[in-house]
Image (cartoon, rainbow over all chains, first blue to last red; front, side, top):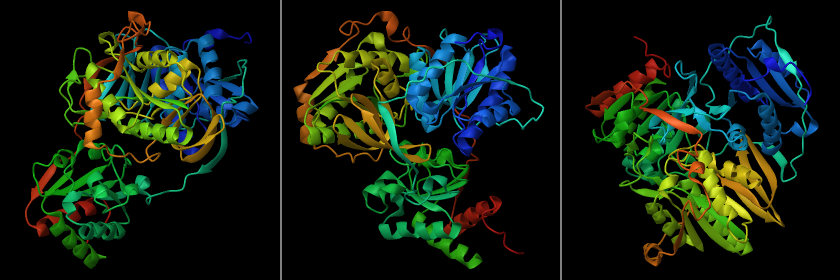
Length: 336
Length: 267
């Protein structure tokens, strides 16, 4: 490793810089903003790690958004995001510069790569955090992560080992505005890259959406077994069409053959985060409700006022779905 | 092909009990099941055995009653089951858990060609243990796999990752963490379950059998601590209406208007 001004590089707050596309780049900017806050409390610097090729413009962008230092590894074999090669480069940097904190986005890649990196560094890792703060008494990073199926939040600390590592849920923190006057350093510590011959990506293509666009839908209408029959369940598709939404289903409905498996919501199915979710004839089993927790507004219709679904609704309507739904369709059609 | 499937027993009830001293889940007295994605991994292992021959070993770690999930795996068709259990393992975080599992796998003869697990569990949802086992054993890993095909001493797999469908070739031995959709899960005949439970042929390995010190496992071997558990603040409005279908429909439409999803009616 080249000799350099190590005083500025030791014990910082590090962010894994993921720039692959718009979404992941935003997550990196969000992490830089949070890291600024943490670094100022701890009296240290924010360093963004950048691996790949032709990275200058990302280095400039990250400095403009709050990074003090951008640590760059440029190599053709780092162009593709790969767990093994990325782990070896960053593990060596971490051993040399001993960061206090190391954060990454809870993207698919982040959630595959950070566990391996944490293990190599023999340190702790928390998953998909929704908050980060420095404990004023201990100086430890308090990592708030969902636990036990999202029913609880756990405050996790990494006691003695370093770095304190966490993956962070996308969209939780707000990025800082672009500051054209920002000044930062770009450093190129020496690297050794071994191409990963054991894992090779042969093809990569944008995913075809399946089962409608359930996961991206702004409005989701869900029916449960309380809908009564396949014929009545079909009315949900008419409602979804009127509201330009998508239809989701619970496990019993899929098992009964009223809806395709692609529409299954739940722990073994899809998770949705729409603006509005209308849940009709669903009792509210935990395996289903964990998948809809992220919805902004939840309206439920169910005959049983004691149904657990009503514990998580913004508007709970006690009534028979098969009476409410036809009347709702009729009323909406008259207005449109 | 020698295949090891790592399975975790998870609670299937909505009620959960927490040990506030240890900040861990109390598993006694809750109904449990094989973590759904680990069940998919098991089916994938059995399917590969059908194509390539060999043996499927299921490996679980947890308190003695985790035996139930291993019996279930034997009933589904696994050849051998090993439970890693020791009071000293309690409170292990993912770093310590992966250490125990990796140690057990390293003791298997012959060394497995393929390790399978679910890409995450429904109770803790970290997805850490698979990649951390692979790291400790120096094996390549692919996570989020939806499809597996055999190609000589490699696997060609498909995985969904950050909006892309990747076709990946991985050299064996390797760890594959599976996603839903890889294999349909068959339901078990009650008879086969009863037979598996009554046979009781599940090996048990503890800390000493695995040659692990007390410092390597449990709370002592863990890098992280849960210092507090919080209940997420209820953010829902929780309005509650009962009455005629007409009344309910009017309230529902009123909410759609407030959310700006419908044009408000004139007059």
